[in-house]
Amino acid sequence: MTDPLSLSATGIAREVNAGRLSARQTAEAYLDRTKAWDPHIKAFLSLSEEGALAQATAVDNAVARGESPGLLAGVPIAIKDNLCVNGTRTTCASKMLENFTANYDATVIERLRAAGAVFLGKTNLDEFAMGSSTENSAFFTTKNPWDLTRIPGGSSGGSAAAVASRMAPLALGSDTGGSIRQPAALCGVVGLKPTYGLVSRFGLVAFASSLDQIGPLASTVEDAALLLQVIAGYDDRDSTSVHQPIPNYLQSLGTGVKGLRVGLPKEYFIEGMDPEVERAVQDAVRVLESLGARVEEISLPHTDAGLSVYYVLAPSEASANLARFDGVRYGHRSQKAENLLQQYERSRDEGFGPEVKRRIILGTYALSSGYYDAYYLKAQKARTLIKQDFDRAFEKVDILVTPTSPTAAFRSGEKSDDPLQMYLSDVFTISCNLAGLPGISVPCGFTSSGLPIGLQLLGRPFDEERVLSSAAAYEAATAWGRRVPPVPVPS
Amino acid sequence: MELTEKDVIHVARLARLALTEEERKTCLVQLGRVLGHIQKLSVLDTTDVLPTTHVAKLSNVWREDEVRPFLNTESILANAPDREEIFFKVKKVIE
Image (cartoon, rainbow over all chains, first blue to last red; front, side, top):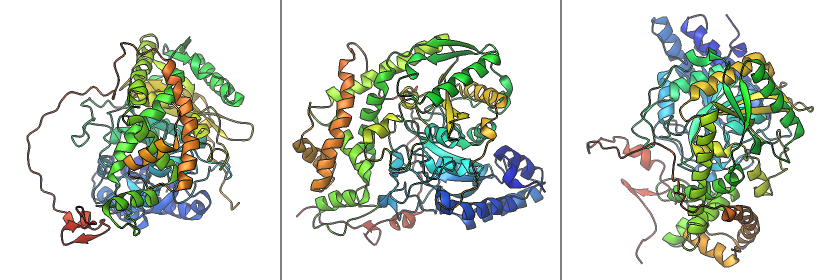
């Protein structure tokens, strides 16, 4: 039997479906590795060992009966802990939800179950997905598998670290301003944010509803496409879900980039970018050229406004979404309250961490009477300008190529006292959410100190096929994604 | 528009957050810097630009108003901080 630990998710599903690999042994292998390594990496908030083994056994039984268990037969998957899995704790890495047990499945979870996936456990994140390092988790900070003194990125840092260290072949994350792509880049894995409306958010704890999307983290582009195939599609329980035919992403992976028009937005090559990151991205562009792509410089003139627009709109939406956490129906309730108002105020003060409170205050301020026009409405108008920049660019080119993050992984604590510096690490990923585009990060090199660098490819809305096939062509021509981090040792 | 301590107290009340005095002070400094950055937006010319609330291509969707049974009330109440029978229990609403 093949060693499941050496297989990709696609490889595991193929072998399990063919009856050549046991899903149960696969689950055991990944659980054993996670139990040995995760005390050093701390990617998981909880493991669901019993559930995983039961799911895997059911897959093996289906194969034995001659049935086909699905596209993800026996594939162990790690799930970001802001997605509801029926009967398991869903904490959002917050004290507010420390003891909350989800009583239904998110749509993506239902789809994973139907496809034969095996749930390893829930992964760490910045509290309520607000952050770029997992340092805002109320429980602990996840470590970057390439250097345990550094952060894995965020907010889906647990999912990215789990895949990078191969404790899980596949993971789900969510991306509001880069929360899949930035940790994917910093951990040296593939991360895809789908087009707004492609994947149902029903059962995802909402952060900023006009920006949130769920997407895959994987060790190869093919695995990311496989997971997208399973989770994409219309759902009447998410009112922003779009009726759209779902193409066969896997079939289009081999299209290549010959004749592809690639745009390099000049505003993304800014001062302050790590020169090693810039060099790696320029090298990647030359690889795409050598594969037949036509590269031209283009302009997205309102790029500079992106960060400001995001840090008005996302906190505003968050302040509304997080109003539901009042200690009445679920979540933390303060024991120090003497009346109902105090019960709301103290439950929220005790339950939320500093960054969440900061964003609620910022968002409430931007929406409050007297400031609404200057902040919220102004930001919504600027969002239109950013969207129009992309519309114009995509008249000339098929794909945009940029760095995913201006630097490689930073050290734990380096930016945690300075929110503005932390926010600046999202500078290249947020416009994609504001415009609702699909975006992927693929490994494109390493710094001299051995830290991964990510390349971001952005496409037209619902053109995941081209985003994935371009990333796959680049991946096939390079070997960056095949490197794995060292086995973790106690620091 | 300089953020003041009075603003923070007002907004915290609106957001139902009981910030400690120390939290208020930190908030004032950190958000002041963030708002300083956001001021960049004021130089953008947005005359005649329509606001974007979201980018989805959506129109109203109609469906029949059908009752769907939900049989798992107990699992909802199991997450409640306090309950009585099938109700959520809270402090007195009207004094």
